[in-house]
Length: 208
Ligand SMILES: C[S@@+](CC[C@H](N)C(=O)[O-])C[C@H]1O[C@@H](n2cnc3c(N)ncnc32)[C@H](O)[C@@H]1O
Image (cartoon, rainbow, N blue to C red; front, top):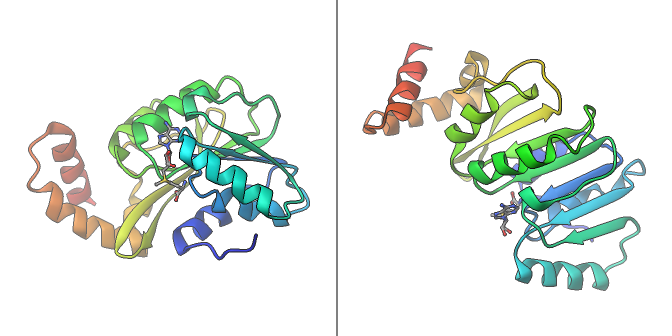
């Protein structure tokens, strides 16, 4: 299997530590998880998704191709996953921030401090950031991906306390080339929002 990843998925791939066990949670087509097959140090690839249709198609896809690694295909939500190995990279990308937070709170106590989470929520982003700001994780990367005029957050966290997550994102993020473009767009959108969370976010962005 040798498909080319989109810019967004390639960026997530490039920021995922090449640990022995990599789980692609909410994997859908599985292309991101399967892209780690080429690395000798990666022993297990977990493809996880709650959708039966997704799982059926993954089983067919992996049966039809010559996959050398151990590929686990699991029909589960993020908050149902059990991981017993040490030093894992767990990717939770492309679904809601609330579901990602539920997954993190379920997985946190199962995993060792060397395990890493790679997150890219597609909605409820502020809710996830607020939850992360409680300080349970060590922030390794907080950046933004631009693809087809859409902005996607990307956070990489170690499973231990340390450098906290800013609920609205540090200044550096909003001064990066992609962050600055997104800030401009958000200021226009948030200005019209009445709810207190969006208003605080607007005031924060405006103050930078
Ligand atoms: C838009 S696809 C994202 C695919 C890929 N991760 C990406 O970023 O392109 C979202 C996938 O997340 C799955 N999903 C939805 N809720 C989930 C949850 N609570 N835990 C794990 N996966 C979930 C869906 O079944 C769907 O296949």
